Image 1 (cartoon, rainbow, N blue to C red):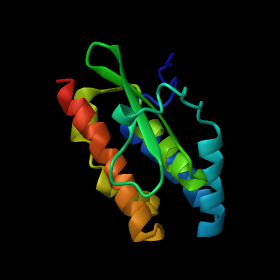
Image 2 (image 1 turned 90 degrees about the vertical axis):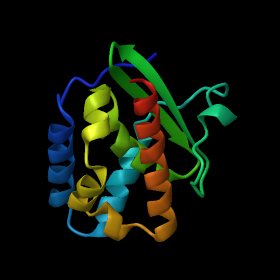
Image 3 (image 1 turned 45 degrees about the vertical axis):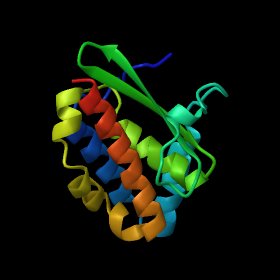
Length: 146
């Protein structure tokens, strides 16, 4: 069962909250720990949800994303990974995208957002590719829900 985020109400507000959290932290070691901590709060997926149909291609780690329609034109996402840092990146994406209108998901400039958080410059090329594979999967699911 999924729940809609109580706050913040828009992707931009969620991004601003995340940016504030990252800005408070000093160096990237602290930020990595924060991302990993965010991942610890994710609810695990069931064994049935860890299926091939939910698996995200293009990630070095095992990653699964579940997309659910929670209201007309509104999608919620849940995800999991076998890697701690990737679970944290999933949590970041969930805060940005889950419980949002399809139109907001499709219009959101995620590359700019991840740049504002400093994630694109701090991640290895492999992790960055995996992150954008997750984003593309979310966008593809949103486009399919139109």
